[in-house]
Length: 549
Image (cartoon, rainbow, N blue to C red):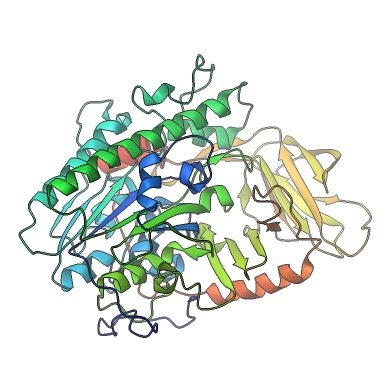
């Protein structure tokens, strides 16, 4: 279900039980539901999703007990907004919770509240940062913890201790469950998030050589590399991937130990298990590190669902979205759910029946909708459209590509604060060097050949660092106007799964169709979001994760 244009300010909790109108017998609720979110876990680095390293033997075995969704897409590559989408069933613009300080409106229900109102005992453990309870994540929980366990100065980088503490707290909650009592447990971990620092022996599991001479891959260092630029030394990117993969394998082994203890608690069979992630991670596939662009590596995430009534080892290949998680869990637990959710129940897919419509869409965004993407599949074809726009006169970093519309042969550009040089590339060919000043100047691109957009790239030789709100550092180089800079890309996800070839100019009909479809996702907030005051320890935690400078 796509976003409604209507703005709702309240929800009804009296809708019918999801699944009753699906033509199938409703699911029988299990005694308990365990939802685990592994932050920053990209699906294609799991062996069960086709990766060539044995990173996830336990998760692979778990998928064989239930259903693995092969193509799940996050609605934003950001921990705060993506989790809020998954746990409310609303798209980002509808719940309005954006970093760094958005707080979910009390008028919008969140998943734990639905379980709590249905009589479940609810427990939640997160590892703070953008999963701090103050953003709205603690609502509906009988017990909730978002405290990092260590107080030593370097504790922010000892992620293995945090994961062990998170799982131990989860087990303590399960041990406290009374006989016959139903429960919902939500666990979240940053164990795969930067900094990439798996404990021994996982730090050398996929890297047998000496470490290259490169910066420590903390979030702050990765972010600075993206802003300032430069070249990584030989082997550095493979080294980062190996450490990231070691973190995945470590997490997989810890989850194996966690679930092995559930049998001893008598909870091993009558249980619904869901494994998810909020977004993936970039390793220069599209020019930068971390996770801030709308491509497959940041949006394609795992989703594994285990339930006694599901087919064992079923794989679902149609694209689905994280926004579908809440209505799906409502279906599995037969909860009364909010009316008007934009996500849809995946009950049909869980039963192996396929999607309700031949066309499947997945939407994602960044920068409050200034950057948008839509993935479309009709069963035989699968495309991703990426629409990247910046505001008129907005300051940009060292590098930006945009489309010059048909009929335009020039644009205007100026430097940020000081003169600098920039390389101009048109349709992949170096054209000339620009001498930029802080005054607007007209740059002519040359004669247009044919009736198609031209791709212009401006790459500056340096940028100027500027400190902004909450200690963030931006590195700015130039601004472009007339036309307003916008870039439209289209990728054939079947013939080009790595998304290396933009086919937008060869497929104008598909571009036009998907641009029209994007209008269905334009919406306002269902209720105004609040704002969280970020100070002290919370600010330090966000800095440790690389969210703030």
